Image (cartoon, rainbow, N blue to C red):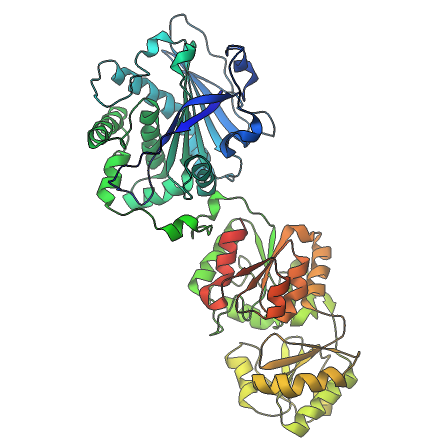
Length: 583
């Protein structure tokens, strides 16, 4: 249909009833033609707004679900609003024309960034019937109405051959951008109405305009008010429609009373559940949202179903990232991870931990196993990229430490009584009891350390992927790291994931190289992944990903290479990054 914009009414009524402001509308607009068939209706001298100056809404490609024409016996017909992309398949029936009957042309549109969702599609299908019915009832009610505050620019619809209206369903991000561009208000609203009626043109078609509804906000309000999503969207549609018909609850208290009365009458006449939006907002008796909320780009928990994923995979570190300083996964992070999985995005763990440790941690929060994040049959990068598992959890890479380096490290541990843990796949081997060795199991959930009777017994127990020295953060920084950086030369490398641990690993191996191996194995490009980490061992992984997020508790070197710096692990930084950037 034909879409256009105009000056925006910015009057705000002093009585704020709702957490989210209700509809404001645009009237008397410049024209933008999106439907070639209707362009010929306009007079040649009509000004068309340049596409580069059009609103963000009207420059978007819309998914037109249907176009419905109403007569004595309604028969649906379908039409696409803008033919620039593939659109959802819809049924089309050619209506029989009758003379001297008002034709109602209604387009139900789904904004392109709103994902396929069976409930939303069901609502849109019902709106094909509901909106024309509401239009007819609303027009009938205008015939004998005596409202004092309504703008009577639309008084007699009988003088038109047809009436056009579009209803678009979108998410909060989209409607927020509309508000920011056209109302200078940086927050989402539940509904916006944009009038297209220009009385001076005397067209045979009454272009009522556009009603934009945020399904995301509608779903929250439906839950708060105890009715279904369809009920709430119907209520918002009625509110938006009345704005297009000249009602405006914001200009005065009398106007608010009159619009509230008409909302209730329409809903009652149509037999639809719920109170009008004005009454519902008044009952809620809440204040307007805060300035902080307006400026916050973070999506709400439970809202990811209204957004398309930007990435197919999210690679996450464990210690210092998914795990907080208590080495636990918070309930907020658990909810975010489960929500991501439900939206079809794969979470892949890339950590210095063993696979068994990761599975044990995730079991505690119901995120392990077939439908979780990690299992013995899922891909992952472990032991700093020295153990990489691919499809069906099969090992695709194993890197081992030079036995001579391992021997030197064991002898150093024994002679200086500095605890050492040698990683051999899912086993942790050590030379003597020590509280720090115990903490690796009790705090970090690694396999319990097995005490070997001698260095030779430890070396003979199996291939060693890496060794870890444990000491105070000061001891690592002033003694262990300087010594081993010089002692191993090019035979191995030192890595730090935690301030009180120093890891010695084979040269040329890292989480980043492990992630690259896994991506090649899975046939995924770096553009398809997001990565979240905190330690120096995450640097290559963050650099490899299309979007690398370092948490604020991370090392300065890591934060320097990241695309973005998120909140800390004690502030649910991984969950926050997912809600802000993954969708």
